[in-house]
Image 1 (cartoon, rainbow, N blue to C red):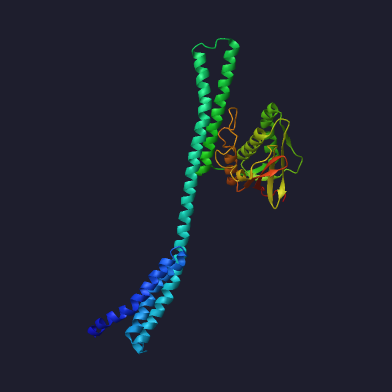
Image 2: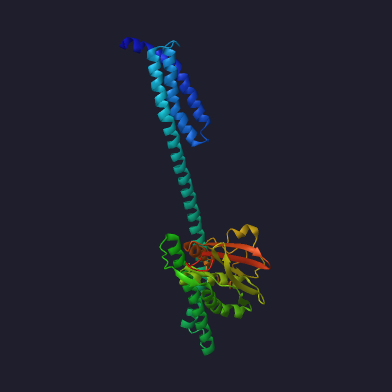
Length: 339
């Protein structure tokens, strides 16, 4: 019996090897195709090769023993093929997730490098000014009382700017690291906007820009008052900075599709279409945005605004509108608020 089985091995290999080679060629051609199909073929090839080998050994004659072997092959195929398909889908999902994670990691690394480059540039400017003015005061180069007061005022201004940049970096770090925690409550948007307009209106008045809150039914949203106030202030600050003198920045709000919306319209002249999707990127300020008097504090304001809005389960987007740009924020309404 054993001798008969051993004698049939070469004949079985004669029929099974071509099937295996054909399966290998098929797998080679499918290397850029569906991973699920490739795994299914990989599992199916041994079953088919065994089936063909058994049929070849039997001399293509149907016998009870052959029927039993073929039944076993059929059962094995019926079990392994669906399992292979499920396994292939699972592997495909894992591979896709790994690719997405790798792409996200690369994007985050590129963003970090860009942020370091931008912040390094912005830090050097005020630090160099502070150093030069402090050395002038220490060496007695500036002695006149009015000049000393002016130098002190400028040093204080640069210090405030540096403090703001450090604060922005800390806030952005909390957002990106997931350390940001919100205490949610019902927040009237009118109060948040009124306070932001009052604060940012001082800088706007110095530049000759009007800041207006449009008359509308201001909704009540579910959110964190300090973080929402920062979102509005960042949007207003950005709008004022890019609106020319005698221009206007208008804030309005309302309710649509069970969501509250807040819009900030400016007179910046529009954003190039290629930059619309990048305005919320870290340190992005567009071409020509960097000037010696730029007070954008590293270009982090819109990135922080996006992070805070997303932390509220909200959405933020930018589009060209009229003489300038429109930044629109959508937030969930407070429980019990009018829908």
